Image (cartoon, rainbow, N blue to C red; front, top):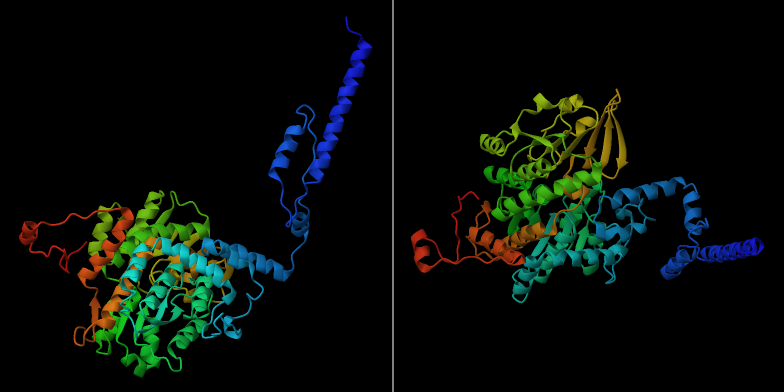
Length: 550
């Protein structure tokens, strides 16, 4: 029979030992204070947890000393503005460039007011911050990994230098993907000066990386309208340098040269245009007999229409909408204006999310396609009061008018997937009775006197490139098409192309597609001589006539 007094002494001794162990663990925790400049030993942390008695846990809180002090401080006005900017930009710019947002000390200074010099001593550029070049180079290298066809073209033609002597002035989106195109043109012998076709789509770090290599880039994210035209003029008007080729996206560069520098424009050997808006302008000049140089319509090439317009927009529309609105689209009433290739891509994406999608169309063929694909074809005025989201994809102007915006319900979203910013009548919203409230980068609440809010994205400009990114692989297809079009126009013998607008030759379209098939390990079937004779085709293509509808 055990002695009760002895048992009590043993229990007291055990309890004392456990308290001592707990105190040792507490000291171990307190010694593991985490700060910005120290690292926690994960092994020590794990062993510390295992040393705590399970039936008597010790409540000891780890203090993040410096972080706690920083977050408890109330930020100054400038600090709040800087923090807000970094948060909003990180949700809209490319992921890989996050580190470049840390240097925001000169964010308020216009690049036009700064003197910057690259490592080669050149100042012939104007970008946000040349110090971001290293980050931009990383983004370009990542893009190259998914643009193997364009890199393959670069390697095949680099020794021949088919663009030697070409002086190309370009106006496109300046992203990591277009940087791969620009550097390909340089590798093929061209000299390049570049500006942006959209005031919101420029990746600042990529513009810096290009400027560091010697390409004269005049662009930054968030340009004003005055900055936009100033940048175009700086590209064109450079002493001792006269362009002889144009690569345009939207027609603004072509229009500026035609109007302001007509003598320079007449000496251009060729124009390559990739947007609906820009092609429309070229056809207007041609019809009026004012187009004095040959132009290549890349927008209507099969590789551009089917892949960039359809498949690219099918993915990037969701990226742009989700990053800017955080809205769930299942069950939402969505109206997409236009059922061309861009509209088809947008419809497919939103339908897959469970949205109730309707279409507006002027073309009976496109309207019938929409009906056969399971969409209602409506007039916007008939559904304007019920709609949750409107997306324009027409390339036209005033597709959504002020009267229609007045009748939209509270919380509706309006955005544009066409190139031009004229599809939504944004100018009519800049009136004294309406209040604009910027809630995050590229997202404005337009507030009516009765408190109704309409959410406007990217101020009516191109949503995917203004508010998100686009798939690199698809841009490889478009970039390869543009490079081949420039090579064709620059090297064409006199008389092959007159002063008119031309489609990309079918053979060239097929070549672009074939370069990208290796990515999927795809193997084409070859025609036998008998089969080729039966179809009346060359065994090596082209395989379809120019009038064929893919």
